[in-house]
Length: 241
Image (spheres, one colour):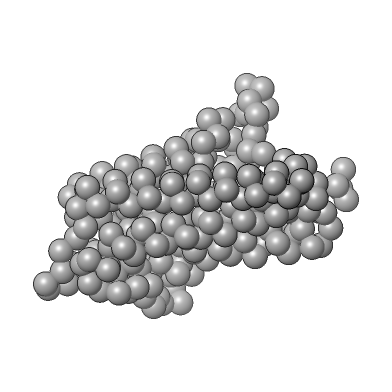
């Protein structure tokens, strides 16, 4: 059994319930949706179009900062009630050898994405949209994308989906059931039907890294690397067109 499993079941600690996980999930959705609506409404009041430049970078920034707040429900319905602090959500140290797991999973994700691109092209499916333009043009837009999309978002999503949801489900359904269920939820909330399968597989690999290393930092590093590479590739793509 991995370090993650051992850490979760420390004496005197009970895992959060399915009801608490559902409530945390609903709270996370409300935070992002209602926050984004409020930001959009404020822009309209100020005379800006939230779907057009130069307003859209601010909408992207606001929405991703709001996504960072999904850490709050994970904390409130997790360690706040059941103890263990941030360590309980996976913020533990890891060994250097676990970086090899991160590298292997990263290569796996790149291979899966490449294969899916070929399949999508053959089936004439739309791919994942380029998010970079939402942050604005030039190096400023890239910097915002890297800080938020490859910084804030990976931390928030890994805390919620791996540190909170996966660990809670694993206590009840075992490793396999929890991996499958949490990855299905992770893919579904991204709401892009044409890339559900690669996102699902990416989540499987992230959860595998977490289970093997016992540390959320490894998942955050993997997630940030994937997102960061996507933004850098989108920024450089016009130069090679």
